View (spheres, rainbow, N blue to C red):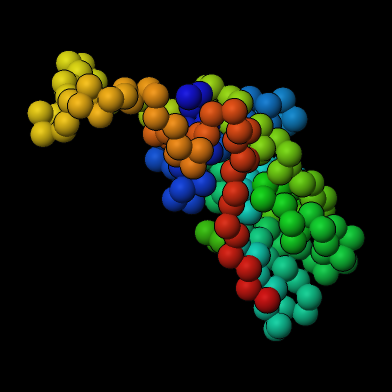
Length: 201
């Protein structure tokens, strides 16, 4: 499996991955669009305009906020908190409520250690997120450990019945619902990453 497929399967089964963050596979492409990592917000001055992107983790629209929506995005470097005014929310309602990955152009607003990005433009980047399963390299991908089982291999368990006793070999068995090791069904396209956002309204 490609590294991207492994991350997709991790998200499908557990909702996260310890191998790599999905956006680490997209960082070069995002940089080409002048989209910076979320951690750069820590060094930016109040009022500066910025382009960021991330997985949509949380959407909040408190009743006391007069129609303002707060969104939390996450990339491989950290999180960014967005402020989406009601006028922009109505203009981009579908993107705000439906995107798994969002790109944002906005203005940095900082008060002490609290940093927000006041959104001016929102883009649905879910289509880009869906390409991760086809990608093989990611910045900062954790290498596979060199365990003894990988280095030396393992023989058959002596407690298992011999293959000839069953009259067939393991490669002859077929179960259409069997998800081999990683969760990939041969001949069936993999699904994109499904991010479960938490929505409070």
